[in-house]
Length: 494
Image (cartoon, rainbow, N blue to C red; front, side, top):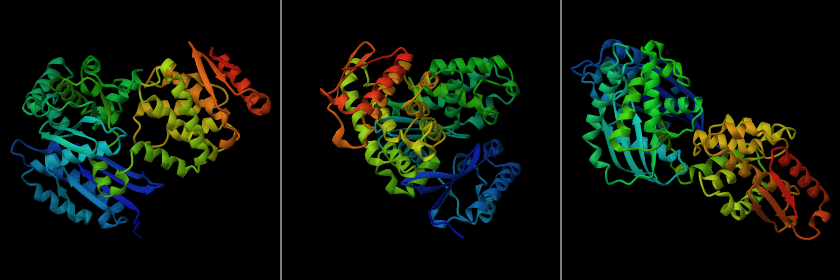
C-alpha cells in the first residue's frame, strides 16, 4: 500500500548511491529512511570514458536494494538522478537500461549546471541565512562551485575534479606523502583557476561546504576540540596529520570515520586547492545539498518560511509545547537581553536568535516528565534533526536549554564551541530569570522589570512591593541567586 505523504530522492553519485525517504510532519521535513552504499562508480571509468562491467554491476546490486523501498511511494513523489560519472560514461545507456528495469522508474541524468543549482538550493533551503553565499560540493567525479543569494543561485560551475577520480590518479599507491598531496592540490588548482574569474566579483558573506569531505573535516575539528569553522590553516594541519600516518590503510585521524577514510585525502587536497584559489577564510557545513534540493522542489510550500523558524515551530507542535507560554518566556528573554546587550556584547554569533529559539523550546522535556525536564529536553534536542542550525549552533541551543532550571551543568556550556563559555553563560542566566519570572504562566502578573550589570554582577529591579506580593516568585529568585552563586555569578534583587 502506497503512502501518499512519503517522498523519495535517489542520487546515483560517482562515489556513493544514496536513497532518502522523507515525510512532512508538523510542517517540517522528517527523514524516515536512508540507504547509502559506496559504489565508487567513478573508479570504473577508463581513459576512454567507458564504464566497466564491474562498476555497473556494483551499481545494479545497490539499486536492487533501493527498488524494494520505492514500491511503497507514489511515482510522482520520487526523483532519481545521475550525476558526473553517468554524464561522462559513453556507455551510460547500457547501465541505464538495466537500472531502470530494476527500479521500475526513469533515471534523469542531470547536467553539471543543473546539479550545481540544485545543490545550492538544497543548501539554501536548509539554512536560516539569506546572506550572499558560496557553496562548494566535492563529489566523486565532479566539484560544484555555486555563488548566490537567498534561495537563488547566480554563478555556478561544475568541474571534472572529484575525490574518487583524484584518489585513483594521485593516491593510487596508497602513500600519504607531501608529494602526492601537492600533486593533487596543484592539479585541482589548475582546474579551479580556469573558472575562478567568474566568482571574483561576487562578494559572498558566507562560505558553505555541502559534501562528505567537508562533513568529515568538521567532525575531525570538533573531535579534536576546535569549533566547526574550517580554515586553510586547519586544513593544512589535517593534511600534516594525514602525512604522519604514511599510508592510506593506516590513516586513523581522531574524528575521521572509517567509511570516509579511502577518499578523504583526495577530497582534502581538492578542498585545500579551493581555499587557495578562491581565497576562502572560513567554511561551515551546509544542512543539505543535491538530495535536499530535489526533495524541496517537490515541497514548495516548505520553502516560504525561514527554515529555523519552521524547525522551531515543528518542534513545538510535535512536543505539544504551550505556545503562548513559550512566547511569553521568549519575549521576556528578548526584553532582558535588549537591556543587557550593550554591556554583555550579545549582538554576536546570532546569540539573540539562539536565545529566542531556546526559550521557545525549553519545555520540550515536559513530554517525558516534569522531573528533570531540562535533562530530557537537552537529550531530545541533541538527538533531533534541526534544519537551520549548524552543529555548533545546535550544541549551544542544547546547552542553554539543559541549564534553564535547577542545577547548572557547566560542562555542557564548556563543551559547546560556537561561542565563548562566557557568552553561553550570559544567555543561560537570561533564560533562567525569564522562566522564573513567568512561572505563573499569565501575562497579567508579569512585572515591569529592569536589569543592570556591573561586570558580571546582575541586578534585577522590581516594582515596590512585588516580591512581598509574590512570595513563591521571590523564593524562586532567592534560590536562583544561590544557584548562580555556586558558579561564582552574582545576582541581586532590588
